[in-house]
Image (cartoon, rainbow, N blue to C red; front, side, top):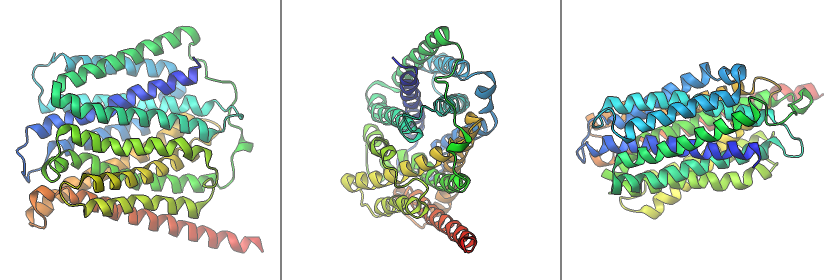
Length: 408
């Protein structure tokens, strides 16, 4: 097996643990909340806490793998995640309490921030010019998307049928396998790079910085949508659409599966590269999906699934714009990847915090029925995407005005 393939597989495993761990913890909290209640859900706070820690880790700890080695850092965090899931899977702290879940999710996200920036650093350093960066990033995106979809689909049904402790035990096995794989790779290759080629300055266009900025703005607001949706849907899906825990995981998995389908073909399509108008236009799938989801009546699962497909298309395209331009750098790949992950997590944090503030406000003012309060999260995401498209369009017009006169 090629070393690149190993780290793609590790991305599948850890991404599965990421989504599975979050959804399982949220479902534990939602299970204890009476149906139809308008009080603030701690599952929203759990999501916000996680992305806050992830943002701090991405922006302040991404340099660790640049300095101490990618493989070494990946090995340490997979060991910590193995221990973490073992503690919860066998109830070593006793019956689950809310503070257990917050502690678990905080430590988990510190590890995630180091893991993903280290893997991105490995893949971006290996610049085999026979395989363009977009294709290698596409394979990486396919990996974590597959993990996300798998984690979402299996968690709801496993929690529903076998209990939350079973989910944590499954995640323990995945993390243990990941740790052993990294340990074996360390013994064989040490901290050596995946390849000996590096990005050269001649590979970078002068306008890469502008496109990086556009990509990160689009990613921030797309993740705002995801933060609002992922933090609110476990309860909204139960109260308004009357879904079981398995049905909630299944529908959230639709977004991840859509991401997977997009990443299968998008890296092979080059027309979007350094094409700002097209780059902005492609993101309109997200607000279209949000509008459909807002007006989907209770129980209309097919319409809701179509809406989630549109949201998944827009989100995955925005993500790829950001990571592609962010890693088109000659040095400090993990640090640059950390900035990309920072925009991702800060966007998710903004979405979840907006929901935490707006849902109680809507409930207090009796603006919407209690079981339909999750629609506030969808509306928040829609307004955020409209603002995103406006900002990106304004930046493009300002740049065009500045460049055109210089051509004469």
